[in-house]
Amino acid sequence: MKIIDAHSHLWLRQDTEIDGQPIKTTHNGRSIFFGEERQMLPPFMIDGMNSAEVFLSNMDYAQVSAAVVTQEFIDGIQNDYLLDVQSRYPDRFFVCGMCDFRRDGFLEKAKGLIDKGFRGIKIPAHRMSLDGIRKPLNSPELMSMYAYMEEKEVILSLDLAEGATNVAEIDQIVAAFPDLKITIGHFACVTMPDWEQQLRLALHPNVMIESGGITWLFNSEFYPFNGAVKAIRHAIDTVGINKLMWGSDYPRTITAITYRMSYDFLFRSGQFTDRELELFLGINAQKFYGFDHLIELPYIKNMSE
Image 1 (tube, rainbow, N blue to C red):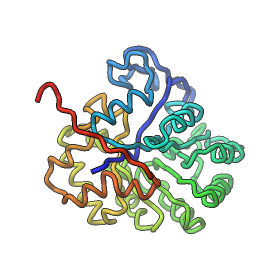
Image 2: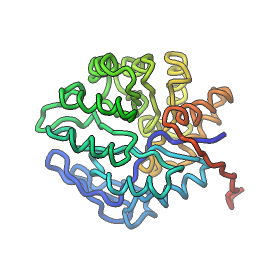
Image 3: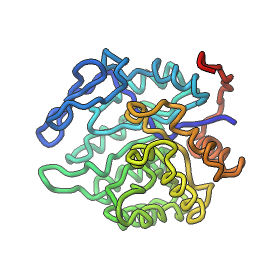
């Protein structure tokens, strides 16, 4: 089985600001985050760098062949670094570009990112408010960007606001751009109210759901994440296994668990067929993102075995 992680993050250093509050790398994997110090990375990543090379080491250990790298406003815009990563590791990473979509005037910048080689664009829709005003996903400038993305066959990656906040907007986008491939992260905000309305967006032919952050959302129950297992089982019954992809939300989630643990709970649950696991963990993402040359990775025994 070749595994693909459909939701991960990379950055050289966090140094940005959200709503006037700084988010900055400090030391020992920590960052200042909305006024408090948080363990943003595992404590052994002492330089604060969330690099492709460290991630590749984790991927090789966990037998993950490839990963989709998304972006988030809280990490700062990482376009230059991600283009470099894609050029050095083209078979291991699919990277998404990002602009500050909260402010008008981004369209030419977004087109430029696509022309430079980004095959995906990320919008953190749950953070699309500026000065208390939320920008809708169907604003005129965004709709113009989607038209260019559809023409260039670029994938739209979204983390939506909880529940039904963005649902009608996505319906309008899908109606206008039926060939625009869309993926929705955080398993449709599975632990939030009205999550099924977001989940059912995957009934559109061009929309997929990925599970990035699901172990964070069910962190209160912790490993082996029985609630997450039930949610994935329910999603399979609701939209079908072919519309679902696994994602880890690396590296944030591995401050609590190992990278391998972010998917091996699915095997340990006994609730999925071999075919469902193959589709969810790799085949669906391979088709959706167009990975052509997936490497095979051997299992390396731990010293504790």
